Each structure stands twice: as C-alpha cells, then as structure tokens.
Length: 152
Image (cartoon, rainbow, N blue to C red; front, side, top):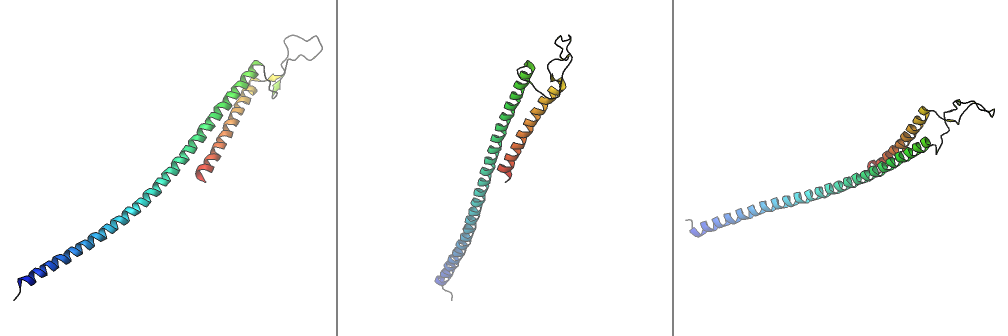
C-alpha cells in the first residue's frame, strides 16, 4: 500500500523540481534580458557618439557659413566703397576707356579730348565682375572647407 508519507514526499519532490525548473527558465530569461540590455546600451552609446559627431559637423558648417557670409558682406561693402570713390572721382579705373571730344576747342594745340574715363557700361561691368569674382572665391572656399570638414 501506498503510504501517505511517500505520496506527500513525491508531491513535495515534484513541486521542488518544478520550482527548480521554473527558476532555471527565469534565470535564462534574465540572462537573455541582461544581454539585450547590454547590446542596447552599446547601440545607444554608438548612436549618441554619431549624434555628437553630426552636431559637431553641423556646428562647424554653421560657423564656416557665418564667417564666409560676413566676408562676402564685407567684400560687397568694399566694392561699394570703391564704386562710390570712382563715382566721386577719388579713384580711377583705366580699362576700356574712351576720350570724348571736349565741347570747346582747345587753344593749346592739344587734341580736343577730355580726361579718359570708363564708359558707363564698362564701369558697371567692372564692379559686377569684381563682386561676382569675390562671391565665387568665397563660395569655393566654403565648399572646400565643407568637403574637408564634413566629407573627409
């Protein structure tokens, strides 16, 4: 006959082994969760590093853009000062000049000409070309710095 003690012992052993089995499963799950957390931590650290590098690149690009924009404004202001000086006669340009005839004949025997000066279109073209050359120079510098700082 089966003894109550042996039944109780069998039930207790079954419960004990079931408990041990459940603990082993939970330990495995806990180890897997720890591994996932570790991998996610590494991924997060890598993404934070990438984000910091991207922010640094964007900061450098912004600084370069601000600096070159200021240089361009300064160059345009200088061109405008030169344009005003040429217009006021403080400076002279000596390209594509013409010597228009004087309205009164000269008594000194010299040719009937006034001081050589730029034609109006040549003067406008000169300042336009100068402005565009400076703008192009600064754009090239900006692109070179962008490539050097961002792409390489």
